[in-house]
Image (cartoon, rainbow, N blue to C red; front, top):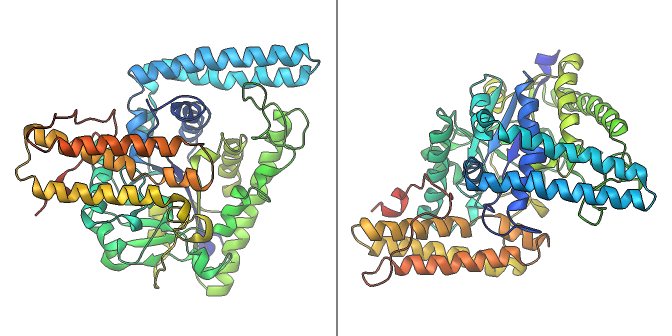
Length: 491
């Protein structure tokens, strides 16, 4: 019966804008350090101990930052874990003890072990996150996907050359780090516009995820049917009805009163309370996560069986999440995920990688509509009056870069260095994260300051294409070390 109903592809989209070296607390590289300690390292442990099929998307810009960890940025991360996090846990636990709240104090001390374990793992030189990820990618049950270089919203880019710069640099980065690439690409923000698949195909993409919820509504059978695009590319709809079981901030599993409260915090931003206002009790929360995993698997089976009844054919249920939800936003998320891996075979739910799922469930011919997985399922999160300055600044920079490269003539020596720096500053400007943060009021003025700084550096780099201006350093920390300038230099 399980093979008749189809299968579920679990896709984890791992991403972080380039924050290494650009500010610390409350906005900046501490985002990365927290994600490494509480999400990426525990997830690697989980995946290394599991044989369950899973697809892991890792954006090139996240890898750019993980690649720096053996060096000076890694020393800053270790100092953050061994000094900053240890000190604040000790201070807040003492404060809670002194104010007659021993259960909260005990929870703070327990949570400090999360950071101690991360520190221990990072001090083991052979357990570098990228090395471990590459080893996982060699397993038949793990599919690694790449993305565009800096997670740009591809339908909003201003030129073909700018689109190709993002795609070529992203693919080159993945192939250099992980070797073979089977053609899976995470479309940033699931943002699709008709015709995009032709450019994707030209860069070796064979499958990508889309969100057509705004077209068909939640629960429609169309969301369990891969779609055959032009040029031998398959678009795989995500099933938002299933995703909402975990992602919803009002009704999803993470809001249960027993789980850890992400929002209520101690003096130093620690979280020893549950959503219900009681001291957080991890054993009780872990038991609930396993119960929710059993329910989740049962509901996925129901979803596939309903699709089979409606269509008389197997379906591919694609469940995609931001990896950072599991362990950071939802503290118990990885306990839940591990239980899903255990529950699926016992209940008869086949798990597959996205590649295997596309091979197994035939794609249908259907028109895809412009869409994203943002608010409104359109592009408005990144293209509305409140973020107009960000959107147009990135587009102006793109058009100026393309025009400057066309006028520059032979590019070598100082001119090449200037163009490389301009291209990297452009890639930084194109990140979808800045507009997302502004739209959702997540990071004060950090995204505007980042846009202004990259814009000024971009101007200076373009000036370096002239004979009299100073030649800039071509590198921008470790952003896009595999930059492919060919799209800008093509006639």
